[in-house]
Image (cartoon, rainbow, N blue to C red; front, top):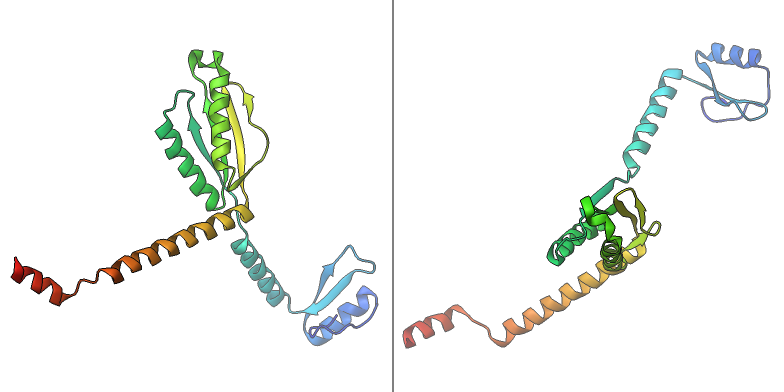
Length: 193
């Protein structure tokens, strides 16, 4: 291929080098695995610059999924569980993978059913926006589960929240229109008092 993208046909590497040298350009191998190998006659500096630019753009646009972790204890209070699951929900909505684990300390390990019940509650609370990667499992003194954000469920959740906000705004507007307070009404109320 020449610098304009036109096919020059199948030729030996010596002939291709001769054509490239005559034009003052370089012969660059594009696809070595194809038969015959595909080469292009281009300015190598410009070609290399454009390739690096494309790689940077691809790296910039790629989404890296971070794993966020939240630790629970078997004797964690219900308010703390709600607070921590709220953080888990936020991480999932932001698109992060989440690891929730129950850490057993000392003799707490003798009652793993408490931790399993806690983990099942967490799974139930996150079920509306997340997918459970695998069932919760025990490893050492930890019972853990990984959650992945479910884009469809998250979108439904966001749509429901926006509908609720619109309804609240409409109901607030109705209350304001039913009882309008203007500057004139305020001055009349002050004079009457």
